[in-house]
Amino acid sequence: MSSQKTKSSGRAPAPKGDREPGLTPPIPFVPPKVDDEDKPPTVEITILKDPSKKATKDNTEKKEFPAIETFTGSGATTVLVLKRMQTEVFEHLGIANDFAKVEERLDYLLQVTTGRARDQLVSIFKQGRQQFADAFAVHAST
Image 1 (tube, helix red, strand yellow):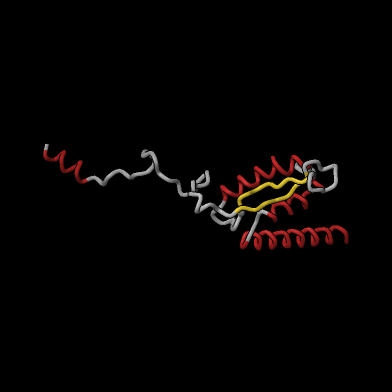
Image 2: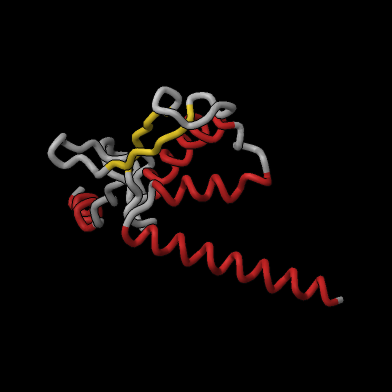
């Protein structure tokens, strides 16, 4: 009996984690709940209510989105913003699946970014345009 006690007491405790409820995963899949005081900054985007008509005061609508300040560590916020933009802006304006309207969709994405995220996005745009220009120049010369 005493040998059994020493065996069971000599074991390392079972690792905590998978079996315990209420643990926070290292990569959250939903944005954390915050108080009103700690509310993240937001950005307003103005869109047309009826895209076939001119932009007048009666034909514009303001949509509020969370601002994306950095892409590092804000994946959940970025995905939620992109999903909302897809349904509330792109589909409403009829540019959701139009390949010719990629630049317009990217411009809307640029409007919801601030600070470092905007710098990163502009840098990516420039690199992509340069790669496209380089590829087009190679194909045009052959």
